[in-house]
Length: 131
Image (cartoon, rainbow, N blue to C red; front, side):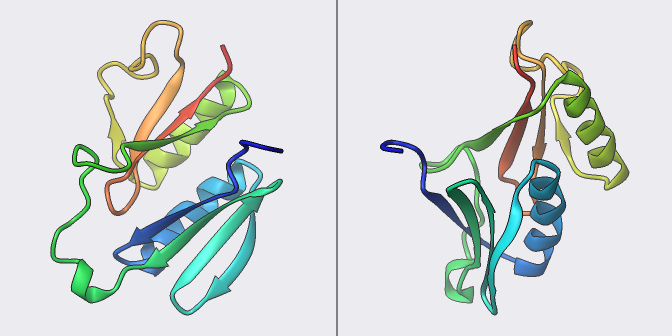
């Protein structure tokens, strides 16, 4: 267990919007709802969990941008290429901003079958199929 990620905590601008977005996606990947309180929600898979917490209003004056210092993106394993395609279709149905559509599903290179998209705060998310 040493070295395995314990949890990630991400501050968000709108908890309901983030919960709706991340809930369906994480549950598609096998996560289950873990903890919920007024200002946060977490989902767990195995011993790892992801937490989303509503940022205090006083910290919302500068919006998140993945090119600034800090988190660039979160990448998740998909079960297969078909799984990437299924999630891509669901993202399109939900009108989620899919990145690099002109290169999809090989935006990361010829041997990197993935979909890249943004959460409500524009955090980049990647779902990548096994090689």
